[in-house]
Image (cartoon, rainbow, N blue to C red; front, side, top):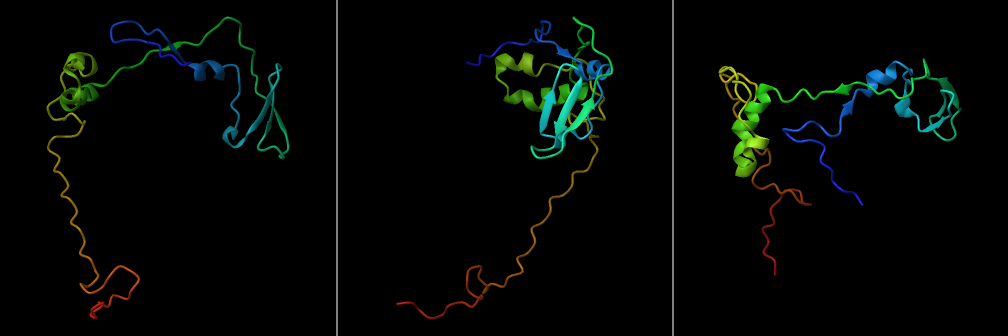
Length: 160
């Protein structure tokens, strides 16, 4: 059964760190070109991968190992950059009214620094003139023309 687990909070350090696996693995392994078009892979402990695009395709062998990674090493931890001041301002001004009052200081707190006045909460210049809405095009059909199976001729004969 799946059980939710807290991975961090606004005041505590992250309990589940994020690692820079791309940088770490690129030191030891080559990229596989066209990997998204391949669907069958066979790995062994030698660093050679056997790849096929489909079950009937010819097998290709690639040695992807540059170096074997040292044991008991991990990549660097990636620190989350946090929200930009513009995003913090947007959340504070535009989203906070929709957040439960007891959660507002957590979800949409006051921005960490002030935003320049010439930039609004969306990151746009406040002096931007809004684009007027497009007007609906007039229907080219005449009043007598229908949309159904007929040819647009009104039935003037009373039905009995």
